[in-house]
Each structure stands twice: as structure tokens, then as C-alpha cells.
Amino acid sequence: MKQDRFLLGILAAIGLLVVVSLTIFFLRQGREVYLPDDTPEGVVHNYVLALQQGDYERAYGYLADKEGKPSYEQFRQAFLSSQSEIRGTGVQIGDVDLSDETAYIEVTVIRASSGPFFDESRYTEAAILVKQNGGWRIFQMPYPYWAWDWYQAVPE
Image 1 (cartoon, rainbow, N blue to C red):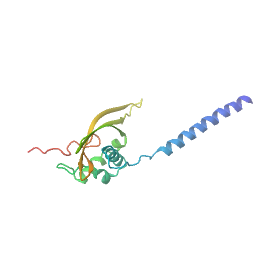
Image 2 (image 1 turned 180 degrees about the vertical axis):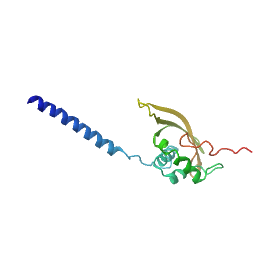
Image 3 (image 1 turned 135 degrees about the horizontal axis):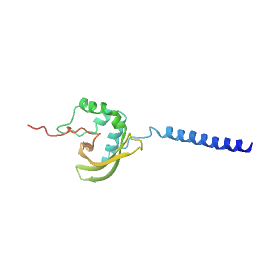
């Protein structure tokens, strides 16, 4: 009789842990929020978040107005076909090298692996932002948040 109570106590504790874990998991989802747009880091964060949430208009608004800028439809199409890749990728914003008109931000792209050991791959590249009309706009970002042919000089 005592062993039955002990076993029931263990099962109840395990059940309680499962319920608490699931509650924390579901409460923490969707907590990403937009940051103020007044810093280069905030612009990069907001751009990535907008793409992950499928808000292409907002993300497009962060692009620099320079020669080679894609049209909104080209921009949207580039991400519609790779939305699952965007959602399976995250970024870590690192050091910022800031001048009057240009900002270089170290961005580490973190990609989840679909392998059996839940490995992840990381690589670090620079995001380049330029100051336009008093705000920061993106001129270059690492893949998969950017297409190779944006802002490139067209050969004659």
C-alpha cells in the first residue's frame, strides 16, 4: 500500500512538471517585440523580425533608397519562396562599427539542422546600413535575409 502511494506521488510530480513545462513553452511563444528604429541594431532586429512574421511591407521599408533596390514585388517574392528557411533561422547581433553615415554590424546567422542531434550551424557576416533622411536603412544583410542581386551594379 505504501509503494502504491509512493508511485502515485512520483507520477503526480512528473505530470505536474509536464504541465508547468508546457505552460511556460506556450506563454513564451510570440514574445518578440519590435525595438525603436533609431539605432542600426534596432533596424536590423526589426527587419529580421518583420521577415519572420511575414510583414514584408515593414521589412521593405528598412531598405536603403539606392540604385539597385529591388521593387516591392521582387522583394516579397524572394521571401515567399523561402519562408520556412527564414522561420528556421535566427540572428545574433554583435559589435557595431559606426561612422557618421555608415554602420557595420556583426550579424551571426544561426540555422537549425534537421539532423538527429539537433545541431546548428553559425556563420558571421556584416550587415551594412547607411543613414538616409535622418534614419538608418539597410544596404546589405547576410543570406537568407538578402538576395545576391540587390544593389549590385548591372554589367554593361
